Image (cartoon, each protein chain N blue to C red):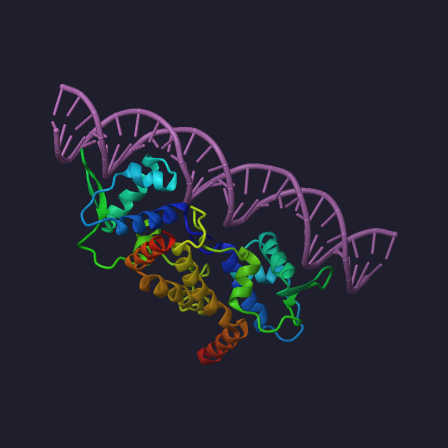
Length: 136
Length: 136
DNA sequence: ACATTAAAGACTCTTAATGTCTGTAATTAA
DNA sequence: TTAATTACAGACATTAAGAGTCTTTAATGT
């Protein structure tokens, strides 16, 4: 049970795009180079983010991607859901109603998700920028 | 990203064993029937629980399994760790030091684990027993 | 010795993830 | 209009892990 590499790449991409100035479009090549990935593979992941409404894409010459400005305050959970879907980590194999074990497992999962929902990309982007200035 | 079926079976087995009286040994056949599994497959899972110190096994005629009495207050997290291991759900694919994304993901994961550690099998066993009496 | 139990190991099958490659669609510039 | 550059979609191959079956070995009581 691990987060997929695709989720990993998506999160790094989203933070990078959040840091970009205003309406600047970033092409898949730049995003792929940043993480040493192939552009075609990353492109698949980016398409999911676009379908999830987290980024906006512009095809054609001078095209690229930018963070969605209609979607305010993107959280970590938003990104994870766009890539991995929103299914529960645990479903009782016995399928009995009101399984007490399932209740516990779901409650714990909710705790994690609540934390993920409270953490915004913009917060991380600001912190990353602050770190950059510190290093100089 | 989902908990394995094996974790599911293990949790149900552990609750069932917790409910049992005192030193009673329960054979793999009974445990497998309870969940409509093959005994040989469940046996593999039970071996992991035994290796993790959560249950004690007695081989041979009249053998079987029982909850470990040297391990006090078994939690949900104990069972999960015995079956799935104790590795993190998220490791940064870029391997850079102090990855801010990784920090967030790990923190959220810790929230879930803290909840799982606070929930004891004995608590669920008591509740399951209380439900049984209510139904009669 | 025999029967009953747990444990170990070999094996098969399925599925999802990972990633590559190719072709199509959309846009800009010449 | 054509060519170049971009995003998008689909087909494909590989691999690893999980799920589960089957057989054999080891341990115990009668």
